[in-house]
Amino acid sequence: PKMGYDILKSIDFYHPVAQIILQHHERLDGSGYPNNLKGDEIILEAKIIGIADVVEAISSNRPYRPALGIDVALEEISKNKGILYDPEVVDICLKLFREKGFEFKIDEFD
Figure (cartoon, rainbow, N blue to C red):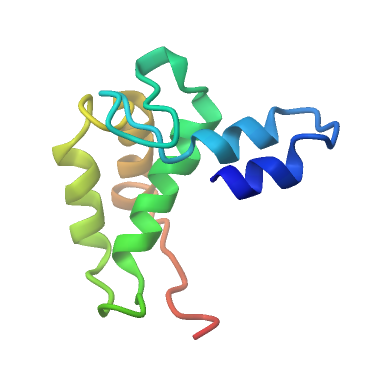
């Protein structure tokens, strides 16, 4: 996150894009990085990107393991709702996948 922040911080965006990038690995309980921010110290957009990042990472192939699937990803964010991840953002993400039929196009670029 720090490198992305450093690249973007001097560009004048409408939204705080550099801060979103910097904070997207922060977690509600302060266990994230790079600044161990907690709760409302983390901007909403970073909470959204953080959950999207987790869901994508778990449900897609990685160099060190095969994809674990969307069900495992959604279980991870459900299990840690209110602990690591913002409850409202988790609920919206779950609704998108479970009720609205959203899906990832996995491995499009592999």
